[in-house]
Length: 189
Image (cartoon, rainbow, N blue to C red; front, side, top):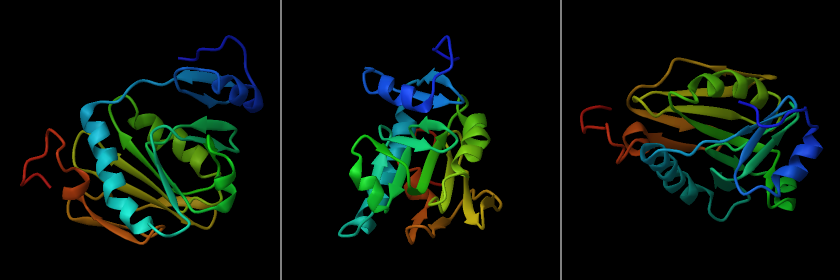
């Protein structure tokens, strides 16, 4: 549900958001309050940071989780669960990023529809984005969208084994991604 009575421009929203104690997303002139995350959601994001960060050390790429604003040409702004940027233009702004190479969202009942539709549409407009990854919080399932020309295209969801993030040349196992998530049993993935 939108929290603003009248539409804002992206510039108006960005100025307003810097003064807010809580995070908000912006889409098509409307402002939306963000909800908190669960233990399992945070566990998956923490696992991803621990798995991806070592491969980025010493290079130009930086990883951000949860609290880094992503501004798109849609126009909109989001707070992805995880983003990796290697673009020197993103080093200039310590509050917002605009040129990610990789975005990962963790799906829940509340966010799955938006992450797989609205955000996919918005993120397709980011020319530097090579991969958009959706990791399901409710069951072992990972869907990877990869840049093919001007579109992000996907294949079948992965439900076991491993995945390879071509954007950062990093392989991950689903067992590691879902480590310590409450529903995971040793034979579940």
